[in-house]
Length: 601
Image 1 (cartoon, one colour):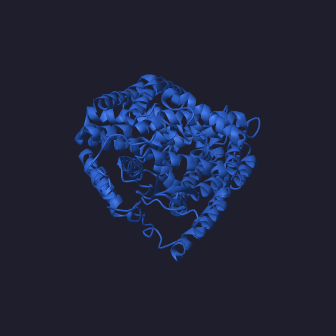
Image 2 (cartoon, rainbow, N blue to C red; image 1 turned 90 degrees about the vertical axis):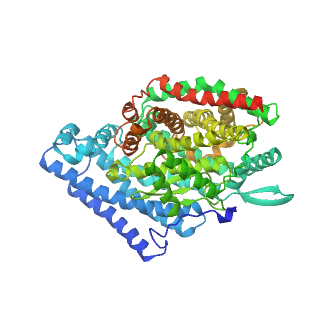
Image 3 (cartoon, rainbow, N blue to C red; image 1 turned 45 degrees about the vertical axis):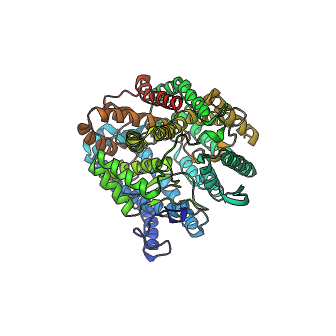
């Protein structure tokens, strides 16, 4: 059995020996020089906003030269930036990593300004004529057309340059305050009849402890600790959302949501169809929550019961067993996915150990070429194993993107969740198939926990952020006002599924997604990802052999078309509620199945 200290940490030495190594220092300085060289190239070719610029041979040559140089820089920068961030994410007290990240960010101001100049320049061109005359523009047609649209929402060149420069000491700095403060929080709590101070990430993991007394103590200790730091975190949130409102208004967006949808390659019609279907499903989720309360023997679930386990399982899902199970199920789907996951474990891409200074939750980060890094705070239960499957799905998405030119290796948030949800579902279905009744309860409940978070809780987060952005137009919000807005959002979405006297008023301080400056609404894409992934899994079950090639092609193409166009390749119309209702119907069936199992146990 692996203890927390035995869990794997990722290997970064395959990129550079260390942050102190000459190889790292050489590449760090080289990338900075490349940014300056790119600026000179922009000046040489007059890459800036103009008025109806001609698309002649010199323009085509300039475009292709600029895209080649920009692509080379982005490719090298992505590896360097990810490498440094991996040290910050696993130990926010690493002063060397923090210093190098801060130094790099100063130079990224110039790159951000160059990106804006490139967008404005493309917006000054007849892009259809450019696509017709340039093979590089044809290859990047979606990016070119999108740049034309975005150019219409740019401020003046001087204002955009100033905004990029101020972002380092504005939204990005406030986001850093939140990250550093929350990753270093130690929570006073009594454990094993002894007072202790343990990391916030460990305390939050106690939400899944089978003992209700431990869950409640962890919940109360967590809230007490968040209250102590609520004032500076509220300042961070107010500053980030105030900046967002100002910039999106100056860029002539009707709302920050419209800007977010544009950058996520989604349209309002799709969002409205999905959110309407989600609201219609709330009675099913509340039925699930009431059923869980009955199984736990309580009149209504408290917030600290949301992640309580149900059922019994003789499978502990220790890390090694979880890895073996994932590989077996991935192999049953395809040898390509299985061999990829084997490589991730073999080459130590995964950092699974919870520890002080490490960021909570889980994520996957593209590192270089087809290689990623996965962070988790592994717990030896089904949810820990499922999270591994989820993050390896992200890594598989990056693996498929790697065959595209670097500027096409993008995954707008809604589509970025496709492979992760698909891999989760593969594992869940396999676990259910071999499980005894009590194990089925445990697995179904864990799956519904996640679905409830992604549909119900995500809606509450969406409503909260919408409320903050609207209120922030008038003034800053106090801690008490943020708490009440959060509680109102939870009451509206969870309804009678939870005890309204035991909610989580400080969830706005917990979720790092609110602090992802400068892009707002880092929430609804998760719902899109879950429901789109379930819909694709249904397609897979209908024709497994034909599906795999189309699926990998879809994953490699997420930076080449909008969400509706990509979905249409599978005959899916995401602008209509029917598709979303179909995916939610799969979840409803799981609720029915869990209710029957609980009633019969």
